[in-house]
Length: 207
Image (cartoon, rainbow, N blue to C red; front, side, top):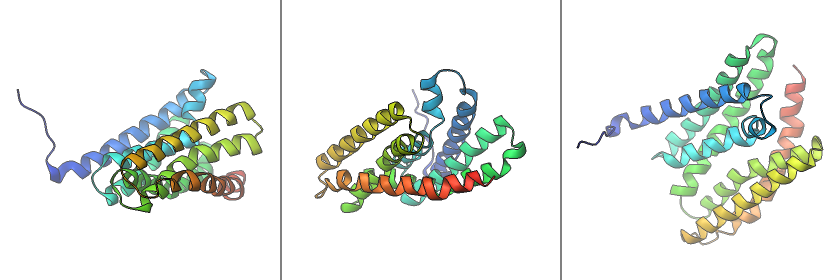
């Protein structure tokens, strides 16, 4: 029996193609699952869901640069998948804002996923906090801004568990100051929430 392998020189192209394909699928699913069940709708129509997948993509590739590119490409593809399915129409401005946000957050989370798995030193703990801040920050947004306290509690609990899990992973990997992940996560989450409140929300409201 022969094993199908991808030549090393083709691996970056395959990784980027996979990131784009998954992003398109996620964007399509986000729109398609509107109005189905609250769980499925929230699981796809979520900043956390869109962005955290880029961290996983970053963790799965070989190089830091490819992780950054994969993160940005996945977020652009996710926006394209959503708005092509929904129809751009009068939402072109909103699509541009979300695409710009994806270009900012996607590479960061792609780097975060790669660094947690492959990086060195305290950067791994900071990267772990950057990954979990998205879930915690969205929990803050749901609670403090939208007053959806039930959903907020779920997001905050998941974010706390994710932070604890990554901290444990880093401790077992021998990262000296693994606890920085738990310390920085809520601080980063606060910054993420403020960015949503004072930048992203105002930009979307302008269209």
